[in-house]
Amino acid sequence: MANKEGMLVLFSGPSGVGKDTVLNVVLNKDKSLQKSTSLTTRKIREDETDGKDYYFITFPKFEEMVSNGEVLEYAQYGANMYGTPKAPVDKWLSEGKTVILKIEVQGAKNIKEMYPDSVGIFLLPPSMEVLEQRLRSRGTEDEEDIQRRLEIARDEIHKSVDYDYFVINEDIDSASDDVLTIIKALDFSHKRMNNFISEVIDNV
Ligand code: 5GP
Image (cartoon, rainbow, N blue to C red):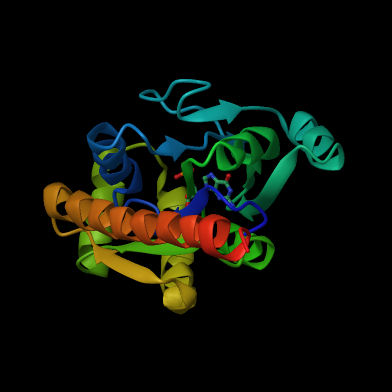
């Protein structure tokens, strides 16, 4: 990782698997974790807040930010663009924070190339049937969008083999406990390595 202090966690999983719900529980349980808020060109959903769930922006604004170098990584998902604002992530990492990016697999792959020490956690549904039910019951997408998301889900699960950890979201409590356990163990190990570098290696 370019920065010696902070740790970057890539949290992915197919649409409808429950990433937001699991992540919210994780963030509530450990206030030291920092979630990055992404940029998106998609329409805001009824239960979402601009600036909290996403920064909802137009296509031209998105393009402008990309060409100004303000976006760390970005990807197209369905008909929309999604991206991670660069400046806050750089700042949090330099402050030694553990930063969580909730991103799809292509973006995660790009980040892994830039930050080889970043850690990927992939959230899986118990089955594809459950995933479809969850996607439908949320009622936020039309049939065409649901079909597109299910197709992307199959593709994403195939591509998820490169992730470091897999958690099955059978129920929110155990899935969030699993994610938190993984992050805490990694964080502990990462801090120990940083201390070793600064106290043992750089001090000689
Ligand atoms: P949704 O429309 O369901 O909120 O998100 C669609 C997909 O875009 C999800 O897989 C989500 O993780 C991903 N996503 C959200 N923000 C970003 C981002 O900043 N970068 C990338 N590459 N993917 C993102």
